Image (cartoon, rainbow, N blue to C red; front, side, top):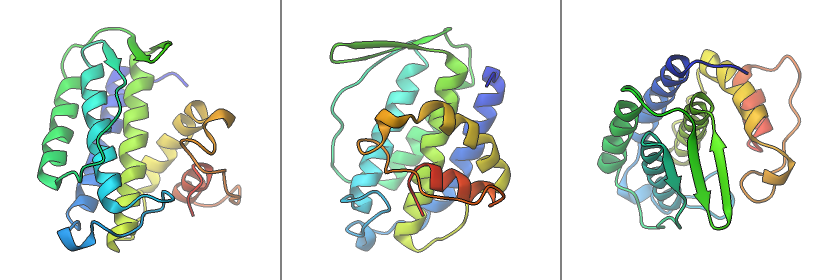
Amino acid sequence: MSRTLDGSVELLDRALGYTRARLAGVRPDLLGRPTPCEAWTLADLLAHLEDGLEAFTEAAGGAVEVRGGSRAAGLVPAIQDKACALLGAWSRPVPGDVVIEAAATRLDLRTPLLVAAAALEVSVHGWDVGQSTGDRAPLPAGLAQDLLPVAHRLVGPSDRGARFAAARPARAMAPYDLRLLAFLGRS
């Protein structure tokens, strides 16, 4: 996969648009609902989404230090503000590769791949939010088609069980959104 940064930023913009619409259905009385992520409530998912938006925004500065995220319920307006900041950060000149540091690990990621990873995370968690709130809007076909190779590049066997559930079967000719979600362990 070779994506230009502009192409990845455009992908991120589409992902944020889809997720922004799912966030509109979040109400305080729904925060305790389960999500497709086992043992996570909607409040947990929103906090994780907020942490991810912050980390991907920080990456626009050239480095990310992975810290433990909070499990406090993210408020939708704060998440929306951070989503705008994320897109703005990647829409101006940015460094080359991004260094991610976690505990004893140091990883250099090509910038377009990192931004595409942000698009994948934002889109799929937007879908998760929709499932929790009853907004069952599918991922747009074009967005899912563009995210599928990103998912195949980024999610490997060592990610299963920890960050993603086992892949689920999907027909080869199933719509792109169903193939993407199945690959990421969702049904």
